[in-house]
Length: 309
Length: 322
Image (tube, rainbow over all chains, first blue to last red; front, side, top):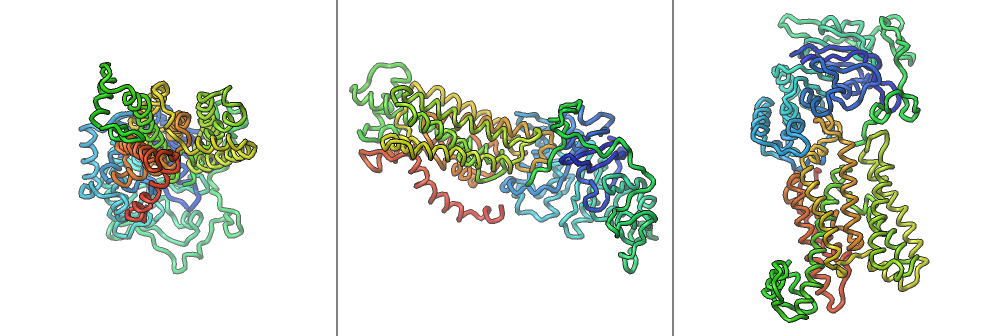
């Protein structure tokens, strides 16, 4: 299914973190969401997997607004693999963890049935984790663990996968394996990737987020121009397709010599702003949950805090 | 349980206990002499049943709370429920003469105190519809201290006789059990335990973290609220009739978790059964260790439980990484 985010402004603790973002993930595509630390990538994802309601704008999956679908229906369409450390899950087996992916299908009080067990087995197979089924989650390597979480997401039978830096802390081979696996799934995927090398190699399209705004979006080679590399990532680098067909990043001898584009002054403290996009007067404000002026009940729409875990 | 009924200040052979209990349950006539019948049916049986119900209730409340606040230290005491109940009981025991309020007054006051504490944790731990685990548990601890301060002040002003009553209440006992009070507490505990067991699958999603649970379609904050209410009701009802029995809510869920893993669909029912058996055993010991005196339950739950629990913790390798 297609994911379409339109004019989304998302606030964290009364501060806008994502401004007026519009992006599109076509059915079956693997789109990478990249940007420096604090550019709002994870916050944008939270709006997609229905954890944080945008102040403005819409998130639609398969043409339906996820906030109108309800939590369960949305969870049947969208599955997420996040960065949370689930230490309290110690002692659960891999099969039990993956079974949790069936939650939106068997309901509040439902018990997993035959169909659920089949879905779990199939997801473990697809994620290449079938041999781990009876293992304790705490005893797994980083790569195995991510496969298990991916299997849990697949058990939701999602039409859209949302991944938040799933390659973090993995060794280099495990990173390649995991991304090749994800690309081979054929599920529409929006993946936050910290590792640009992997992003350019595995994604057809990229969305570059900077300061909570879309700086550029489109096919990899069109997006990561030397100027974008300088303006957003502050490094001197070229992104090219090599003779073997693989897209790679070539960094300058001293990548820190990046020439910031005209009008950007990141070295003087003012972060560079995309010049092609003027700040919209409609963005940049967040409803305060206690103002009482908001038309909608602030309880549900107010900014939500990241829980301190 | 039959064994527990048969042993005590006056020994009754297990076979005879069986006959008496069966005859009572099936509506048959007396099968033994009146004194024995009375000991078995009017004194021993209700207290053993109450011990079982109280143990089950406190243990499942603890298990639920540990999942709610994602903290292995959580139990009804840490979240302030027990302190709330204690304050209610102490107010009833010291400010009014016993004749005015009577035993029921203490129970009601303790129940209201526990619910008040629960409501405060619920209200203060909540912000913009979100119930963050850390804020919840710290709110509970702070509210507990608040109630404890009030309780201590009242104790300072109490007469020595009142103080002794208060002390005994706080340490918990099922000696005052009677058949009249059992239906209510049993209903609450059984309903609560069944509800929590049915919610086991959802409790499991909390183990994966709030954001992941949300992405699975679970309304994490509403679930937390519901579980908190459930745990407060169970704790309040149990403490109201059995006093402040500590450590069961903390130890039993961990004990069961070490044995069977953290899957709440298994954990909750097994915790209920284990809690019930443990408190029946503790009550039995409390009646027999120091005959003819009775030791308060609160002393024995910890005195017996803590060393065993510590031994188990050291033996278990899983605790090193978790």
